[in-house]
Length: 101
Image (cartoon, rainbow, N blue to C red):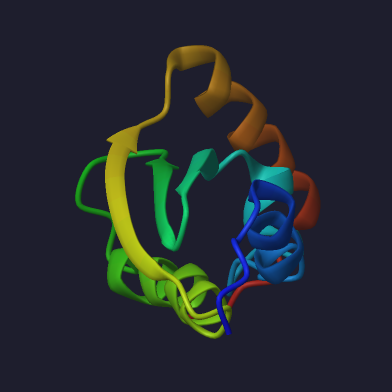
């Protein structure tokens, strides 16, 4: 399979990945901050609300695996949300909290 992977392919692959404790997708929550694709290498930036969140590895793997299934090499970069992003995230967290993890 020599087809190029597009940003849209990656977005579609991770579109249904939900946060384990919030009934919303990582895309909707603003955790997926940036996606760049260079042929078969995907670099994805995840923005977390706080540094060193306990479920970091779970969230990283939850986006890595569907992208790897596209046949891509995946690099995940981690950053912390800006104040505006954090406020939006916390509002969604409060609205869609389901508990767990």
